[in-house]
Amino acid sequence: MQISMLQSKIHRVTTTHSELHYEGACAIDQDLLDAAGIREYQAIEIFNVNNGARFSTYAICAERGSGIISVNDAAARRAVHGDILIIAVYASYDQEELMSYAPKLIYVDARNRIVRGATAIPAQDYDLPGFYWEPEKSAESA
Image 1 (cartoon, one colour):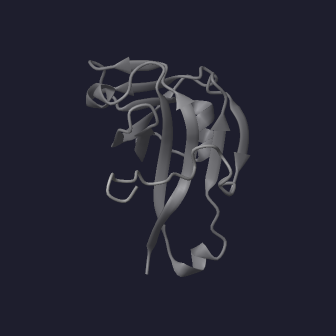
Image 2 (cartoon, helix red, strand yellow; image 1 turned 180 degrees about the vertical axis):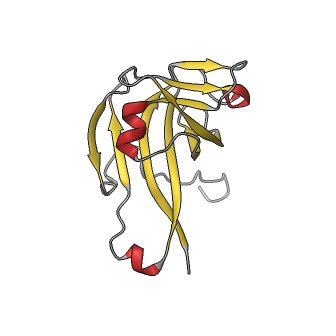
Image 3 (spheres, helix red, strand yellow; image 1 turned 135 degrees about the horizontal axis):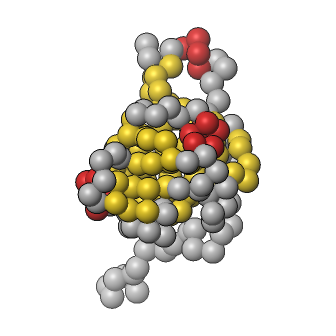
């Protein structure tokens, strides 16, 4: 049985360009593609932190070291300059491959320069302000 798992992600990149009338889906700095193990023309998922949009497209190479994240063509309607994005790639793994499975997680700074890599997502901090919320009480239950 094959299971679809996160292969890699580039976490919180900043959109540098949004080109509605350019052929090609999402141009990504070659350094970021290499670090995440993403190939040119590979299917990618993009999650826009600013507006909640989630969409599928494919990766194309941007100049190495440029920091470019250019969302192009129809996808440009989902992200604009300055938006924070998460770029994810999934792959299918069999049970044997899952024994040694670890995703590639790439973290960047505000200029889309790699600051670190990881193979596991840190535990969520449940003590953050606003993490817990109480449902609003109706007038009858108050």
